[in-house]
Amino acid sequence: MLNPRKLRVAVELTSACNLSCAMCPLRSMKRPLEAMPFERLKKVHTEIRGLGLKVRWLHEMGEPLLYPQLKEALEMFPEAILSTNGMALKSAIAETVLASPIQTIRICLDTINPQAYPRLRTGGDFNKVVENIKAFLEAAKGKSVRIEIQKMVSKPTKGETRKDFIRFFNLEKYSNADIIEKTCETLDTSGETELHGKYAGCFQGGPFNWLVILANGAVTHCCYDYEGAQAIGNVDETPLRDILNSPKLAEIEKAFHAKDFSGLPRCCECFRLEDEVRTYPALLYRLMRLLPFKDRLRRWFM
Image 1: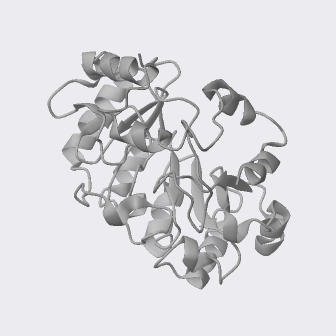
Image 2: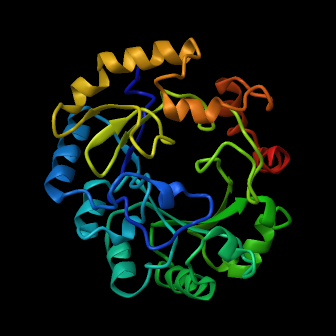
């Protein structure tokens, strides 16, 4: 069952996006591209706080900076990490972020190679995003917000290092900025692509660590379940407290441990290549994230 003390909570402000990234299944997603109605967001906020939970992310799919009530959302969940592709991080939106109580923003540039950038962030403008990041770094200088610039380990970017990013953005000047390295995940497919190798298993270190509330109100236990195919309830129909104790969740957990994925389409995709790829216990993945040389392990697994 879901343990509230260990849960990572994500609230999807919007499923709409201004890019069509190569590693993202947004192009084939069947769910509507929509912003969460503000009344629903207020209800979610009240119930999350009533459970004593904190929100880790303000997205699942979609670009959070496109949310119409962004200012209010950031005030509701200041503890959350605001993750963005950086295209909209300019002018009034950048000012809104800086004026908010948000503690961390992650800007997913992924590469400092302008030739590799379109292969990852399809539809984005490398020069504009870099310009936005540099302007935001200057505007945030001396402020308490932590700025994480994401470097992605993928096949096209395998040779890039954290030091390359630090030099590129001259980060010695900005004490509140850092480079975060992330593996190109298999959210689109567990099969091999031009960006990542094939994979099998729970990429996030276990299937019951997350509570993801999608823009349409559906609640799922897995951050890879972007369609809500394994939803355990909907906040419009059931209080979040009751969803946490949903009998459906017990059924999913029983089927998962029995490796019966016939009714679990997301789990089925993540485990369909387990006969071809070595899998590791979920505990090992969680431990790996704590290791000081985890970035080297990312490149090795790629």
